[in-house]
Image 1 (cartoon, rainbow, N blue to C red):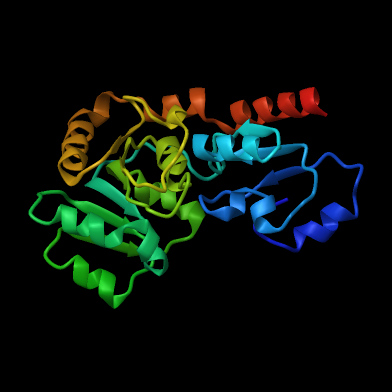
Image 2: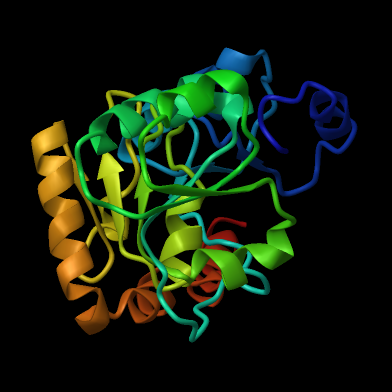
Length: 247
């Protein structure tokens, strides 16, 4: 069941003998079936953070530590010339939770060349005034790597996602990620590593981490870190083993 969509509930009800899994994939009520009005007896509930894991366990379900992989047939490291310091990949339609204003305010007065992928609006463009940014707008997912891999590192400034999918996507493309800390960000520590990404609590730390990653990006092995710790093969094997054990 793709948690949060009530059309799944009657389907689950009609199949009482099936092995049932649930994944809500967001920090609010959606990750917990009962909080979403779904009282099916799920055999396994996928959780993409420690906070979700603990609440699901308290609710009487069997939780699974789910490290969210990316679409690896799309997101992969490409050997292209680096033209930008920072990749910021987020759509203006979600600017309230993707941290556009915070990021562009933090970039003011800095000397970074920024690559921005995602649709835009007049307000976002106003926040970018005076910054050295190359706007690519919205581009099809399959075309993202050939553009995104021209950046040395990536950033994630989300405030409304438990485990933003952009993090494993950038890691798989070989971009170490600097993450803005947020009360609603609870991703598993497995995503964090010297070659991978870090979470910073304030603008000063955020900028220091950016400088460190930019200075060392040639020596980091972020794509290898992803492959060894977060890949689809690894996570799916773990999930299949858990289903065999609990099924």
